[in-house]
Image (tube, rainbow, N blue to C red; front, side, top):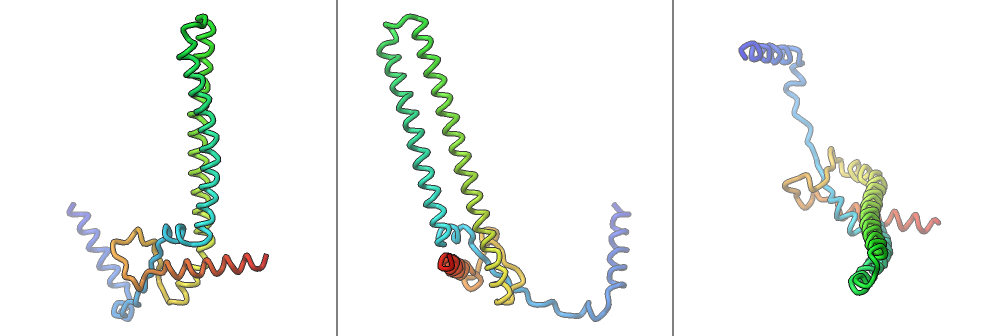
Length: 182
């Protein structure tokens, strides 16, 4: 412990000795920081709204397919309950196996759909962030900012440091201009 303290003291003295006096006395440049709520950009921007609507359409299509599978399962279960006692053991066993197989298939399909939706949502978010990259960099340079952070990482954000609405406006204008050129 004593040697560690000694080594740290020697290192601090060496750094202080090597540091030019002019640098040691120079005031630190003012740090200007901006914040962006990326989630709000995804929710309120035209591209984010369009992407969410597309995801909702796909989700509804997937839900219809799942509902159809659940309807088949319900029909099979009712058939087993009503006619199961009248069936031979072999026929009842086959129906039970078919029911269980369809039940597993439906569960697997629902799980696959859930993963597919999560993947598409993640890709959509990544695409929007890539599109925002240039806008954020330009805005930071124009405002003379040193750093732009995601607002969820901060405990406090002053209203005038929040750039989200300006980013949304610029992003929507840029997307509209790109559509106009097509």
